Length: 406
Image (cartoon, rainbow, N blue to C red):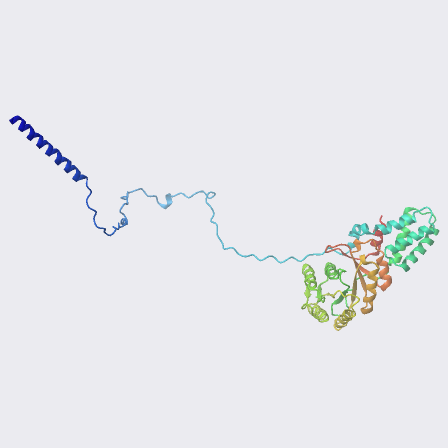
């Protein structure tokens, strides 16, 4: 009985111990109550290291004197490069051109001339070489001359002389016919005419040349090229831009002048042409220039008022001294229409010479003969291209040689 009671007591004690352990374990697993919120903690950055904090203790090392230090070889030493601020470079002024000599210029341009004129010369030689020169053949010769704008009266004269000379000649060899035709064409064009462009007034004033012509003949360009011709012959030039009705005329002429070192006198657009021409001559006198070239407006010959103004320019210029040359610029491709223009200009101003432009672009070389007959003045200059030095003094022999070929 006592044994049973002891076992029960021991069991009760064991159960109590186990219960206490369980309760103690549960109490350890419970979380503590949450604390009330507090302000955030700010962490200060680490303090900056002080100078020398991590410095290594200096050690004694051997030092070399300046005499012991060797210099690098001269070829290895890099030369110092100087760095400069960029400087804006102004464009260089265009240099003054030196025009090619005018002597023999037409001969040098002969090939260009002959390409467009061969239809006249070769056509005549072919017709004259026929075995029988009947009336029909002579009619064809006359027609060839008329188509080339030789003119009615000069054509009739040439045909009559050729008929007489062929009869006397007898045997007609190619060389004989060529020599005959060359001689007659030279007589028709004229070899005794004064074709020199006058640039000396005989006084203390410069020579004055006025250039006239209708629109589209290349008048302003011809004036600029004529300046080159004069400069090539050793003369100093002043240009007068009296064409105030065309906006680009003065600029164009000034560009031509700058290329050869010639001064250009100009005025406002739409200004008085006579006043500008007067000032140009005055400037030429002051500078001691040899020649003053005056470019006038391209007058339409149907506008009487403008033609009267051209006469005014001439009268105003002559207050300084005589007008040495009045050159009429004609487009060779206009043919007989150019003669109509020539007549009107001759009535307003005394034409002293003719400049035929675009002669290389037409087969109507006979206009040289026709215009000379119409005005009674010689062709002095011919234009044979668009190049700056394609204006040449007219030489009858070179021109005829280009017409008939070799």
